[in-house]
Image 1 (cartoon, rainbow, N blue to C red):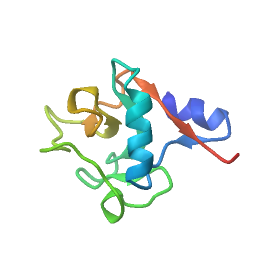
Image 2: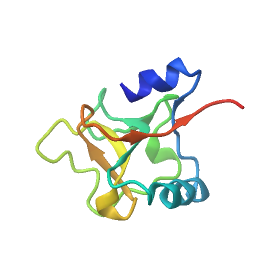
Image 3: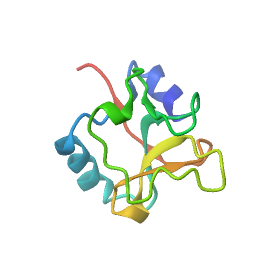
Amino acid sequence: IARGICQDLGADLIIVDDKAEADFVASEGGMAIVDVWMGATDMEEEGAFVWVDGTKVEDGFNAWAAGQPDDALGAQDCAAFSSSFSWAWDDRWCDDTYWFICEGPL
């Protein structure tokens, strides 16, 4: 649902390019009491997270929390900034309801 809303706005879920961007989201995310979706998933190949533009998360900056992604209880295929992990990244069930960040051209 989150990605569809972003696309309806001419954008997509956020791709986190570097630590500065992650830190910015973490500082803004501090207002949230729930996790915040980003644009990464491993739906096509378990454990191989890719951004919405098709690039591999592992090929660039990432900020996974210790022990993450772990696919706890199976089918945790979407990535989020985790309020439980001080805004480090965690894999979550894609049908969970969280805030989300859209990113698009200005």
